[in-house]
Length: 310
Length: 310
Image 1: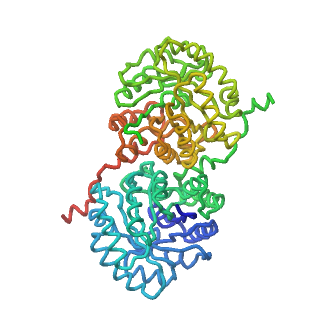
Image 2: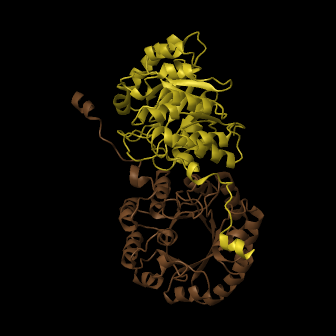
Image 3: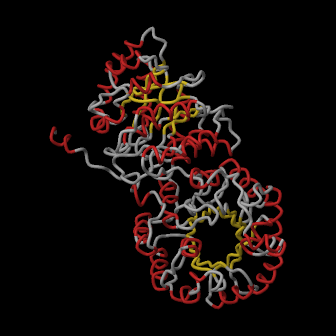
């Protein structure tokens, strides 16, 4: 097991993109600046997609240029195509995150591309990054199951990982996009990926749609994964499961790892302070647990009648 | 790892006792009768406490005598004292469940007894069960932490387990009463308990207060625990953490284990049908995930525009 874990925040991209209302640019910047001071390893700042496709993130340039970049924190952005990549490079991002689906139907539904078409496009995008020093990550959606097709064969996932590495992708995020993964599957797939590609940089990305988010993170940890995507407050979600929880919650994940005695580099109190600001920012409650219940080291006063008997 | 897991339902006791309104006796009986047909190993039907202490369960005799008992399902009840035990035995329960706290302050706050006083009382209760064939289980509250005192030393837990076994307790439930446990601690404590007392019958009882409920169940499973308490819909709660989730949710737990390929004996669809009736029964929404999101094998229709292009 690694001695240090890397916590990667996705709320301002994976979370904000599906909010019903636009978060003002200055609020996004203020939140990211707070998050930069918490010890998170990486922040997925925004997405350089078409403003028509994702109106909530139409201020990608302004946000990326407006934030205060803290040394040691990597600032990554989602990039869907060559144009998005050129916009991202103009903002001097540390990393671009490409996204494709492991399943044909989800790829077509979500990106209007099959996995084959995504891989072809990735080659053009990677060409644009050559010589820039920007890290290229690819997120493999539905790696643990597709909401349309069901099971995604593990061999298909391994084949896609190999092809991504072959075309120059440096990091790969295994995404449980709609919360279908279970811990046995996660353990199996993550261990095998680590065994086959010990030098590759893998991230695990889980949703808590079916309550298994932290159990899956634990299974990935036990399989040697040391990088985890998570979303402040548990923002994000699944468009196919209304009312279901979103991404695993950053403060809940950090809290669990800290209680387990693991090093995340994150100052949980600062992270919680940032999370506390979310409901006012987005106009609704968030699914995270620690915000409601407090940390496990929280002490409660004895009942009044016990004091009376002291 | 065991080939079969035992799922033990606690909603009608641990859940109903803290509901703000009384659930009508016939509704309790109807729910338990439905649960008896799902393949659950055990049902904690009610509590033979004073009606003044827990008014919601003042119908303990009527419920226990009113249910249809299905062979293969064990019917257990919580028993706080000799009088409760005599009432339970008169209803021909299969098991009595004693409860004590591992921490002095929680014991005094919750039961008005220190662990020492609880153990003394247990002796008198066990005396009453002699020759009846009734199984004696003891639930050890705050085994993973106390909301007043904080850390509960693991050696203290082991000492209490030994003393419970010495006085004739046959099964021991390790309870994370207020959701303080983390998976590393759970794995350590459960593995050590199994190592020291390989013949004892251990149950793990977790709350999802801080989002770690299923991760803790996974850790207990990996440490060789095969019996799990859980509550339909995730009912129950923690009086010290308003708004926090309750017990781990039975249908979420069964769903996770089934997805992992483990045998629980439970018919998940029947269990979900029973869980669906809860909100109307108790007058509010429940925290469980699968009720909202559906099982992971749920398939979604392709978006309309994709059909248009077919």
